[in-house]
Amino acid sequence: MSLFREGEWVLITTQKGKDWLVLLKSGSVFSCHLGSIRHDEIMTKKEGDVWETPSGTKLLFFRPALTDFLFHIKRRTQIMYPKDIGAILCYGDIRPGMTVLESGVGSGALTMFLLAFIGNNGKVVSVEKRPEFARLARENIQKVFGEIPPSWQLVVADIESPPFVATFDRIILDLPEPWRAVDSASMLLKDGGILVSLSPQVVQLQMVARALRKKGFRCFQIFEILKRDWLINEHRTRPADRMIAHTGFLLFARKTTDSVWAEEDNGEDAQLPL
Image 1 (cartoon, helix red, strand yellow):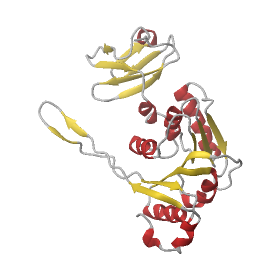
Image 2 (cartoon, one colour):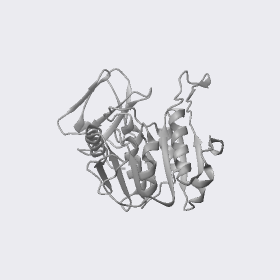
Image 3 (cartoon, rainbow, N blue to C red):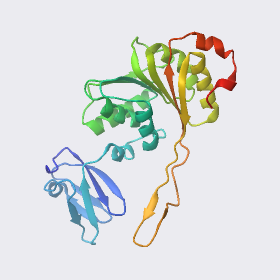
Image 4 (tube, helix red, strand yellow):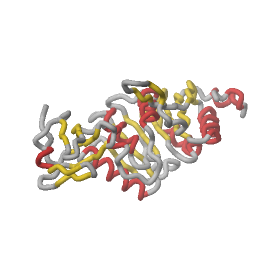
């Protein structure tokens, strides 16, 4: 396995889970409460190597996973949690080569994973209404990938009035009022395509589901994911005291071509899959 190189990110972690993301630069020094180590010395090590501090604590060196970047990037909004991102990638059926539109972008947390999944032959278009969020997302994506990937396009605009005409395989909405974007999203999504919406509140979920149904969307899947960690040692196994519970409701729906669907609803909420 290759040694760490200058300009590369390294994840430095303790056995107890405390970690740091460090960008390697010759002549620099990494320091923490446990001790100090020169970057040049780190660059003589490979992934999985261990270094013992003067206090006797062992530090481990790894190349960071995307989830490591997720919790270290700068953010001005609540980031999307891995449990929700994983469900979006799975139930949203995100594949290499696809064209995906997301709005809003926030700090770019989901964007990182979308870019990794669609690959060089795909395209991710991120629409963000607030310029300050767009700038932060661009900074974070460049930090993670070392450059702005050619498969990514960032558009500062309101998704309710998109400044482009295109057809997307998948559309993902993470908006305060996602139902207002349903008309434009319906025009941009291909027939049979999947629309995903993340909403923290039940009222938001109900309104976007109603709007989608009236536009002829079907095959709804709606759920939330709760993640509980477990602690295991030589003496006991038990659930952790805290868990990542409700972070949002996930809605998945497919676009149909039959306009009769909308006519059949007649405003009846009883048919909504809630």
